[in-house]
Amino acid sequence: MDSADFVSWFRDSTPYISAHRGKTFVVMLGADAVASANLVNMAHDLALLHVLGARLVIAHGAEGLDAGAAPAAGDGEFDAVAATVGVARNRLEALFSTGIPTSPLRGSRITLAGGNFVTAKPVGVIDGVERGRRGEPRRIHADELRRLLMTGAIALLPPIGHSPSGQAYALAPETLAAEVALALRADKLVVYDAAERVGTASELTLAELERALEQGRFPAPTQARLEAILHAGRGGVPRCHLISHAADGALLQELFTAEGVGTQIAEGDYRAMRSATAGDVAAIVELIRPLEDAGLLVRRPRDRLEAEVERFFLAEIDGIVIGCCALYPHGDAVELACLATHPSHRFRVGGKSLGERILFHAEEQAARAGFTRMFALTTRAADWFADHGFSPAAVEALPASRQALYNFQRNSKAMLKELADAPRRDGEPPRQAAEEVLE
Ligand SMILES: CC(C)(COP(=O)(O)OP(=O)(O)OC[C@H]1O[C@@H](n2cnc3c(N)ncnc32)[C@H](O)[C@@H]1OP(=O)(O)O)[C@@H](O)C(=O)NCCC(=O)NCCS
Image (cartoon, rainbow, N blue to C red; front, side, top):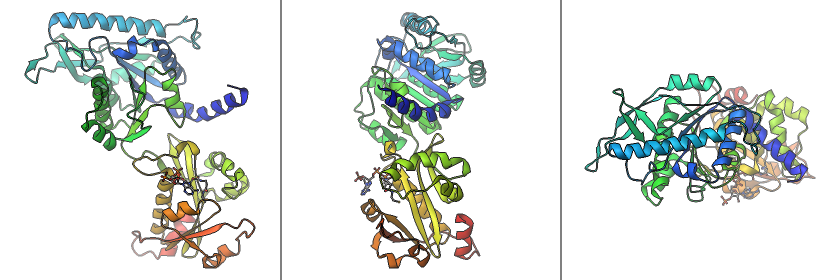
């Protein structure tokens, strides 16, 4: 990587650093991940995430416990599993200990701490088979776990829980991770798997994941992990990720780049829309400058943006601005201007592109405010607007106030659309509401 690449890579990743600081992440390392030659790199990535301020809980597996493996039925089998859990735990503790000569974090002291945070119960009889010492979480002691995280330690949870009577049970690590994420109301659940992605998808909604699971075409461990993700997502964990344990740096790429390398799974469209405020000008400038330089958007000096920022709507993920547009009122018509999406977010979530999400939001706001027509002036996106219900219009069809500002040199195409009625507030004439929303 040359210095320019490094600088741009570092700049691009910094918004994610502040987005993840103070957030709680539950990470599942199954038996395959723990046995992987890449474990040392995974440990470094997790340590880096921790040093950058994320609160981490690692739920780990051990040989004999992954889905599809023989259940820990009797006492003998359980003892064998408990021994492999000890081996896995030692391996992880060693990797997180200081003094790894090749570690980029060799100077920082990281505490891994465990404890009796999970009360377990036996799973009992499934499909006519008594599962003996195979258990499932009955209660996660979330307050105690949170207190541990507040001390700055990483919590390391083995796949073993105890019943109130003191009996130990072997737990499926993916179930443990999902239940812990739910109990902690974690911000993310990250699951390592042999697969790089769910199929080829970088993003999935929970409904899409459910449909994929119904087809049952995944290997048993992946199927079980995705079922756990679905369970966590349905229960309210806002963002889950499946990433590869074989790819060096998969966690960093998934969490610190817009493109990611795994699959992010969320309830629906997690790209939030909101009105812009004065503090957003720098982010808007960063988003639109390259598009202005390419001649796709008309140049807006910073002082103009500062004066007009309240006309902007933003799309964001984790507080990072990924798209915008502005609405300018002209009588009963409204101009949609400066519609821009970040090139790294030009993919569909829940069937909708980011540009569509912003457009639908803008249309809803404008219709709600009482505008009956929306228009846009564009040099290169006329087809995009045509695909979304706009028709080409003569400049003379634009409101007189906008015709007066039309730049004939730029020669933009005017695209016009009638807005469907939106519910209006009782007793308010449309224009008054429009002023309120847009002025
Ligand atoms: C126009 C724009 C907002 C569309 O955003 P988006 O819908 O998130 O874009 P995506 O790249 O995800 O593309 C979605 C679809 O629109 C098509 N599309 C994107 N830009 C297009 C354009 N300029 N003209 C025609 N079609 C376009 C894509 O080919 C894709 O089609 P597909 O689903 O059939 O593959 C975005 O391309 C952009 O920021 N452009 C630069 C700024 C601009 O021109 N703004 C409009 C003037 S105000």
